[in-house]
Image (tube, rainbow, N blue to C red; front, side):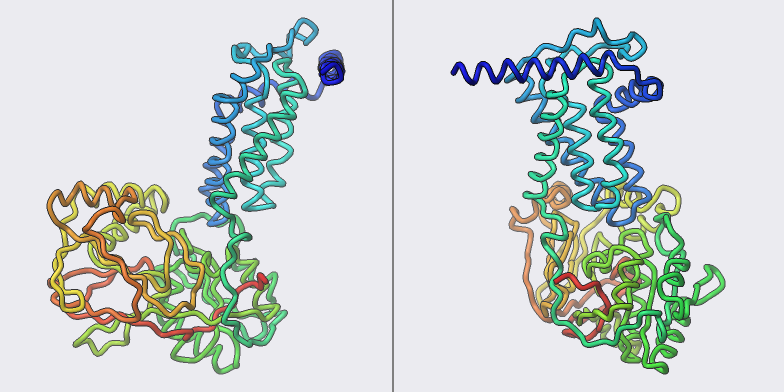
Amino acid sequence: MRKAARARGVFSRVDRAVFAQVAQRTWPAAEPVLPRLSRSANHGLLWFGVAAGMWTLGGARGRRAAVRGVTSLALASATVNTLAKGAVRRRRPLIDHVPVARRLPRQPLTTSFPSGHSASAAAFTAGVALESRGLGAVLAPVAASVAFSRVYTGVHYPSDVLVGMALGVGAAFAVRGLAPTRDLVAVPARPRAEVPARPDGDGLVVVVNPSSGAQPQLVDPVAQIRGQLPKAEVVLCRPGEDSLPDLLETAAAAAAARSGVFGVCGGDGTVSAAVAPALRHGVPLLVLPGGTFNHFAADLGVDTVAEGCRAVAEGHAVRVDVGRVVRDGDTAEPVYFLNTFSLGVYPELVRLREHWSPRIGGPAATLLGAARVLRTATPLRAEVNGRRRSMWFLFAGNGAYRSVGLAPLRRHDLADGVLDVRIAQAGRLARPRLLATAAGGLARTRLYAAARTTSLRVGGLPADTPMAYDGEVVPAARELVLDKLPEALTVYRPLTD
């Protein structure tokens, strides 16, 4: 006990001595910066602002990093403010020797140990870094400055800051334990396909659709492709002037003539439109994310244009399943989908999202569209495998999805050979049940049916019924057959194992 008491005494003296040294030292460059930075981090406002910027400009990886960072911050803040501070109850340092210019206008009233600002800064930055090392490296100096500012302004001892940062990092890893990052749950890389490496992009023909979605691009994808694959042919689809289907068909034919690669840069709708030409001409497909959500590219493991270009340069590809919709009585080519097919409320949600996203962005448009659909939707009546149903939606995923409520989240296998079919049926208290479905409670109701199958027949659809596939909405025929083309498409992706 005496040794422990002496150790605590030594630690306390060192802690206070370091605090005094910081207070007495002159830091001319820090005076106009650190107090303001410290105040900007009050209640996590600095980090919420950074997260908003990452969500808007950072693409799929930026959005994942923003969510992980904010979730880690929330866990760290709750741990520090509800448990740690109450357990230790250490008094704040005396600020008599801290220069007046450094002091905060309002001194904190809570206890000192540990530092909540430091915990939040470390938690947010570590959470972001676990999803994106590049973004984490950019934020690390800011987080360190926020942490040091708490000693600099005289509101915390150094040990408060160090322990707070340790708790913040621990919170980020705890969140990763509950929701693993993509590097821990990698998309299976089988079945691998044998394709030649094309280090300079020779034989690659890429169609770039700049009008896909409303997500701003931090780097020009055309410049990225030409910079990494200088011999690739890049075809830009000019909105209002070019026909995207015609450009895709021509590009696929040109790639086949060169025994090369057919590439597409755009959102899920653009990628889906490239499937038929790729299958028809028997060419491997390069998918480069360039839309709002890029679900297929993300599930494939291609989060950036640079990663896709590297996969082509190194010659890494896999075979994936393709979903197919055959419209009975329609002589046109079947509709192919790589992500999802749906009937019911979801096509209307997609229509509303596409209508509003140019003005308010894709994520906000999705939320607004969901609110409208929940208020105005009516059930759809149709036959599913010969059984008459009244349903809010029918969903079919190209492969098994993890999901919450109406939102399919992610697949871990793009060649599992199954259709993931979900049906939310209507009934008494229909609209409250739909709301429960959207909130993730559908699996606990009798009005939810789920199955994994290889084919599905839907008939008796009312005239003018829309159907949605991979973010596109088109009229549905009265009779539909859904099935799979197992491992039909060869797609480039980075090597992960």
